[in-house]
Amino acid sequence: MNHLTIDFKPGHVQLLQQEDSPAGGPRVLVTGASGLLGRAVLKEFRKRGCAVTGTAYRRAGARLLHCDLTDEDAVKQLLSQCKPQVVVHCAAERRPDVVERHPEAADNINVHATAVIAREAGSAVLRVPVLFGEVESPSESAVTALWPKVLQGAAAESCPLDHCQPRFPTHTRDVAAVCWNICRAAASDGSIRGMFHYSGKEQMTKYEMALAMARAFNLPSAHLIPLTEQPAAEAARRPHNPRLDCSRLEVLGLSVEPRPFVSAVSDCLWPFTPDKRWRQTVFH
Image (cartoon, rainbow, N blue to C red; front, side):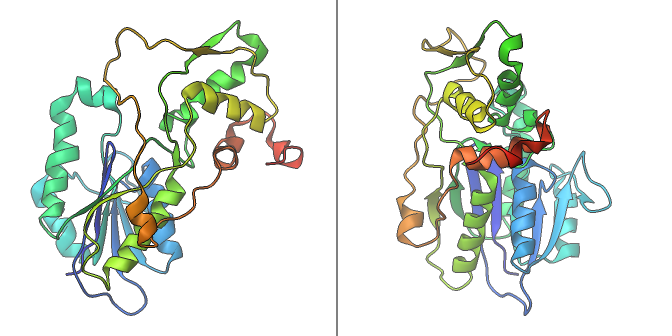
């Protein structure tokens, strides 16, 4: 069985691969297909002509298979029934604060479930930073979660936002395209193994991201106040500088040029604007 498994957990997308692919595109299984990254991966691999099956847990329905990935027998049965040649494992608890508060539950999905799937194939890892993309609600991503603060506008006296910690917001559509590139290359090149990094190129604090959103939609931003001192305590510690070295993907020709943040985040947020006609007046 030819498996490329992509395991997305906080900061990681793990790739595992074997051989063989059918005419007409490989059979692909995407776990966590109802989530932020999973939806983008599902769309990308379908666009590439793959026969894609998606799984979910709480949000499973007519289009997605229900599977509890913490149940080892259920996972093995799923793989046996679907017989995928590519497995893209996007299910995870991605929120650091939740991981800190519920470590056992986070380990079950981020570690143990991943290990069960990983045993079906060999290993390479794609690490990614904070993600954003097409969302069902702005709160689904730490990036688009800033949108309600931007919308407060003149109605808010002030809205303080972190202006200390640099981040590299990365669009899920770009990550999904890199996953496809790695999958395609690994099918014919056994050396596609080890650690890979992919990231957006624009370094921004939360304050700078919020400013960019306000400018993209011609909204007021005077209420957005930069916090230049680190809070005394956070629920979960973050690295001060999350910059990733993405050179290996670039050398191998497997990277994609990230979309500019303003353009990408505008496409994500326009369904949540009070005035849906903004596309007619705002230029990127």
